[in-house]
Every structure is written in structure tokens, then in C-alpha cells.
Amino acid sequence: MEKTVWTVAAGGGAVLVLGALLVVGVHVLPEQAPAPLRSVSGAPRTPFLPRFEKTPEPDDFRGVTATAGDWRLQVTGVHVDGDGILTSDAGEQVRAPAGMTYHVFTLRVVNRGTEPSSFAPSAATAASVAGETFPNDPEAEQVVAAATEPLLLGPGDAADTAVVFAAPPDTRLYEIVLTLDYGAVFANLEARP
Image (cartoon, rainbow, N blue to C red; front, side, top):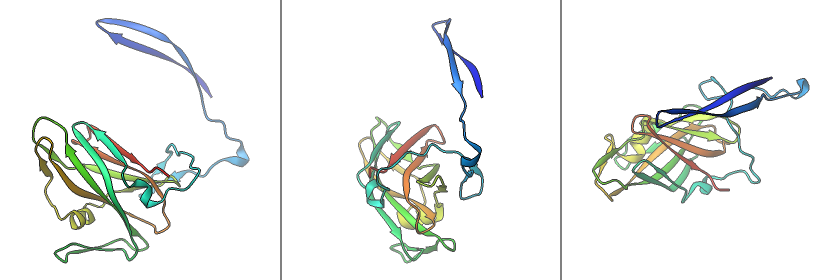
């Protein structure tokens, strides 16, 4: 499969044709056809899967940072809960779906902007080395983070929060993606094995 794609740039009222690009499709031999990847919801997914010399471990996320808009995020802790039950300091509990464990990521968020701002990831997903995706569990997040409201932080202020993913016990995550400001800003936090 081949097709030609024209790349065009517009600037200052002028349109420039930068040139034609040759796009070549993926070629797979019939006996090597990969099975389609599926997310936890069962929807087909074809992610870019990096190659790892060493499979990422949960601690490989510790210390990873990202900047998204006015926010700086750092993973300060990772915990894989073995029994599938998370308990808040107030004794509130949440249970993972059958056959799943919780992967808990503690985040330090810093408002680097010049005005007070609310931090609330409107969506978060985790990707495994097998190509599966797992959504953030908002109920488990509330139990772990002990917060039901978005964090309101002034300029230079920092706070801790968490994102929580239910996944099978043997899942190896390599990336978490947080969507902030109602889908306008993304933060990618990738393990460093």
C-alpha cells in the first residue's frame, strides 16, 4: 500500500507547499500476522509499543517527571496492591474488580503558573508492555488521595495526589498519560527501566 501525501504550511497569509511525502504501509507476511491488540474494554487498539531491553518494574516510575501547561508532575511513589482492596485513612474501602489488582501512582503536582489554578486530571490511562490500556479508577483515586474536589493551588504551591489503575496482577505498565484542563493538555510519564 502506497500513497502520496502533500505537506502544506500556511503562515502570514501565504501558503507554501513543502513537498510530497511517500507513505508506505505496514507489510506483514500472512504467517506472521499479529493478533489485534485490545484495551481492557475490548476495543481494538494498535499502539506504538517501545522495545524494552529490560521489562519495566513499578519502581522504574519513581522520580519520573513531566511538564504539562503550567503544571509540573513527578511520580513520588508506586504501589501494586496485592489483595485488591484499598483503604483510606478514614477506613473507607474500595475493591478492585475480580482478578485485578490496583496499581497506585502517587504524584507531586506543582503550579508553575502565575495565577491560582485547579488540578484535576480529567482522564488518565496506563499502557502495558503487552499493548493493553487501563483507565484511571476515580472511586479508588478518591479513597487513596482522600480528596473529592480538584486541588486548588496558588503559584508555586505543590500538593500530592494519586491515580489508580485496576489491572491483572502480572501486568507490566510502561506509561501513564494524564489529560489535564479538560482534554487540552497531556502529560506522559514513562518508566525508565
